[in-house]
Amino acid sequence: MLLDAELLCRLRYHALAARRAAAGPGRGPAGNRWRPVGLELVALRDYAPGDDPRQIDWTWCARRDELLTKVYAGELDRRGYVLLDCSRSMGWGEGTKFDLARQIAAALTYCGLWQGECRGLTAFAERAVGQVAWLRGVPRFAAAARFLETLCVSGDGTDLAAAAVGFVRRRQPLGELTVISDCHDPRGLGPALDALLAAGYRPRVVHVYDPAERECRTLGDVELADIESGESRQVVVTERIAAAYRRLYDEHLSGVRAACAARRVVCWQWPHDTPLETVLTTVFGP
Amino acid sequence: MNLANPLALFGLLLAAAVVWLYRRPLRWRRETVAADYLWQQAMAVEPARLKWQPWRRKASLAVWCGVVVLTVFALAWPQAARPQRIVLIVDNAALGGSQAQPPLASNDGFANIKSLVAEVVAERNEADQITLLTAAPVAALCGPTSDSAALAAAVESLAPAEQPAAVADAVAVARTAIGAANDGRAVFVGRKPAVRGELGAWDISDVYRDERTFAEPAAVTDAIERAPRWAVGRTWPALWLFPAGLALGLATLGWCLEQRRWLE
Image (cartoon, rainbow over all chains, first blue to last red; front, top):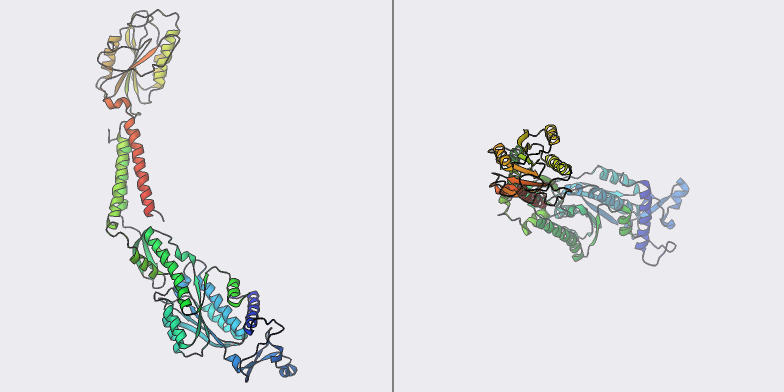
């Protein structure tokens, strides 16, 4: 179970807080002036706590004794996507990065659906390995949860650029796109962000990493096996090489931040053991 | 030095085992990494000293063999525990041996001599062959033996004699008893230390029990015949080699640990 009932309840709270924050500063719950962007009524959806009472279809409620909220065209235009890295490197170590990444993806999807957005989920390694698209309404979260729970690490490498280009080529409507990855792509994160920005998406990056990756557990004659490709090499790891590796790993972490900052893309970096509550507080606000 | 020493032979077996272990193919520790491309970059930035690497294993083998050889040498070196042939000459003359001695005031002086003989016998190594010889008259109380009971009985049977001691004759008998033994010793126990003239051409170790004082004078003189000069302090080479081998072994171990060769 990726998200339990208590966590879902907290997610609804965070989604409500995010919606209020989106309404603008200085507006409290009583002064919530959140309005749908469009005027054309296109659908009805289940009422969710926090919905504007004026948007409830009271006629339907009187006839069927059921609370439904009106959905306008502008509301349906709000879209959000998650690009989830499921390469084998995400499964490295104890208490893997992949678990936190899936939880973040589930939380983002649930909050988006709860806010009436249209959500999509795409898993990738060296290319797209699966997706769930056109999710609307909170009940459809079950499909996303099923998809995430059955997802496992796979592939022979990580190619963020290829995954981004593949996503762009599917010509999905523009929207906010969250890339969740450990960013272990030798080509870096920049080309992927460039492709998404050029296509008009609003990317943001969640970089999940394992601090244990930075440490060299053995020195001397070591057979290094790449978890992604499965290839192994026999090398002599000295203290100097280990120190160089640690320096490069630090540069990798700062490089991800720099690539995002250079493109004005929001970037969050979290160790794999970060509590999900901390992640939600950072993303959606306290 | 005797390489037939069982410990030395065991050491040589250890050297063979070390060589065999080094000739076995190296087992590489497998490490699964998430970011292999970073490792490749690290190797490019800080390449290992490639010229040194092929020699590292051979150097390690040479150092360990050196440690084993040093240990074998230390083990094969003459040890204090090697059996010796000791002739104990006891001046049992009631009037004090060949030199002019004041007469004994009582029998306590001879009791001191007996206790001194018993002490010398008790301090011997288990395997030492001891011959107990009286100087007045020259007679063997017990033949070359390492049997503690026989030696104790012989010491107990010591009795003062009225006739003068014939130390020179006793030394001649002792020389015969030691024979061709490489590490024979003659120990003279009397009321005063024997002098060079009495013991012929033998070296006299005058550091032996000079500090002993008795109510009645008693002395022990240690003479060494045919033993190599270094054997006088024969334990020192082993004492020197053992720490040296140990230090070298520890240095090698430290080097191996630094290389993490033996750590899993």
